[in-house]
View 1: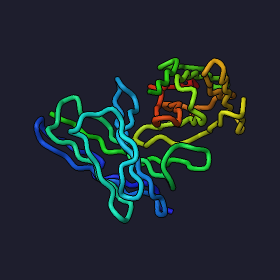
View 2: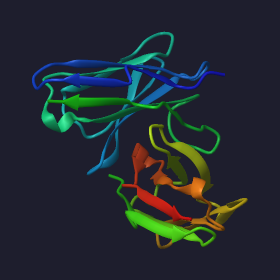
View 3: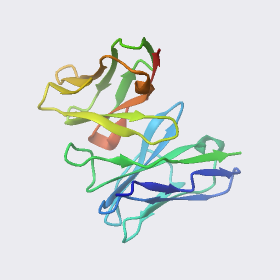
Length: 116
Length: 108
């Protein structure tokens, strides 16, 4: 069974631009979560989607948005990029929302975004 | 909201020795605590987890202990090997909160 895939793997943008990242979950998984990973802040939860609906949202500005499609694939968008948005963006999928021992969350390799 | 603190941020141990990483959480509603291992260029991978109704769980060289009263849980790795070198994250299920990570280096 294929794992979680994220595209692109690397991205370089300049301040003020916008970016869209894509995540394809494991087949059969309907929940997708997004995280931002930086050396200073660690892994921070962005949002969680299930059945095309956002179920949970972390403490990030409105410039960060996402959506989920009927095939469970998800995209996240960051508008008006800032230097501080440089990070590894990780997507994780699970069968249903939330963390639990019966609901393991599988991570993709991430998209490395660099904002110049 | 939930806050998960993780210590130490870096840890170096001699091959064959034990490593211990500790986390504390703030939300008493949290009832599930996974540990992840992240190797270079990869996403985090679940290595062991524990539910709040259990005090300890072992899986070969890895064990996790939980103290609900004190709101802390720990990862124990025994007989460390070079392939254990990675960044380890703890997490609590409420608000999907992760610790800041521990970079573990095993010295051959």
